[in-house]
Image (cartoon, rainbow, N blue to C red; front, side, top):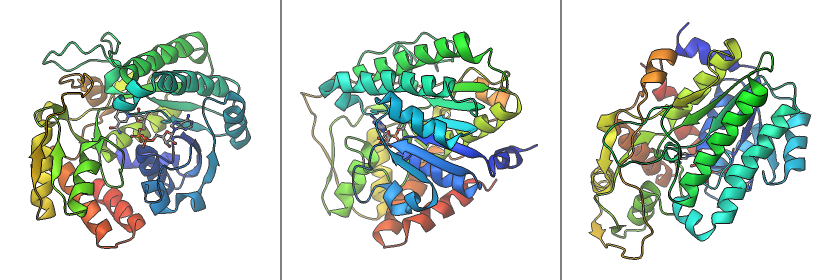
Length: 355
Ligand SMILES: NC(=O)c1ccc[n+]([C@@H]2O[C@H](COP(=O)([O-])OP(=O)(O)OC[C@H]3O[C@@H](n4cnc5c(N)ncnc54)[C@H](O)[C@@H]3O)[C@@H](O)[C@H]2O)c1
């Protein structure tokens, strides 16, 4: 069976997504709906009117529950009453900078909230597959040149990274203590890096910052132009998550472990290169470099070794760095030309599925 045939096994399945109102969650929900899955989501309200979730009108085609994952009883009730077969866990406080200003909220959400979800799953027998999203930042960053493997040491300097490392430890404990022995049940944690794509308006992320500046006719301001990151289109790790969920349903014990879904090592580039490409594709705009002496410490280069996903799942990143930037910029250009977001995003999913 190939990739398409395997993900199509999610057709008609009941799927529960935490964090469905967010950037990755809204793309995931749209893709699951395109596959014919019945989707329920649990998350806080979208942050703004033009969030991808709102633009797509997803609340009309799913069971859309607004709640806080720190509230164990409400989360359990939403999960249990839907009786899903598959769960994707994406809800989190995902911003490093905010984790410095609100460390307790970050730990409560990313660690406590994850415990609440695992407990709810433990008490919901319908669930057969869990894909639990953490981050590449869960690894202790040794600032070395090699990619991190799934078996490498966990750890984090800033509260966000530490919360994701802690969420991984929690996952591992539940997997070993409860889930390995549960029949017909598979669970995997997944670690991806910075993702880009249309419909992201988050604060302090390079693409939204560039687009907000360009669409307002203002220069793009870069604080740290040489900061190098691995860049990946959001559909690439989502393809890995969806594929993994389908494989967990087929062979739960074989795939119950942790997986990296990062871009190739040639996708690491400095922020300035990303901004320059966006300006070129946008057709106009300027870049200003304004170093921020008060910026909190940010970890240096970290990239993932994805040999395990390549060899054991047959997953590979599909869109190159250049393609990811081009598709992302095209999304925003179409959006500002008043094309309906649902059409732009659907078309990009279809294009992504082309060989
Ligand atoms: N975007 C990236 O580059 C990136 C990189 C690595 C990992 N991740 C991880 O992927 C996941 C999704 O990230 P994103 O970029 O879509 O973030 P996002 O901020 O766009 O979405 C976060 C989602 O979590 C929900 N949420 C936050 N706090 C909640 C709470 N207390 N209760 C219920 N829901 C809550 C929000 O409502 C939203 O739906 C997160 O776990 C994040 O850590 C993202």
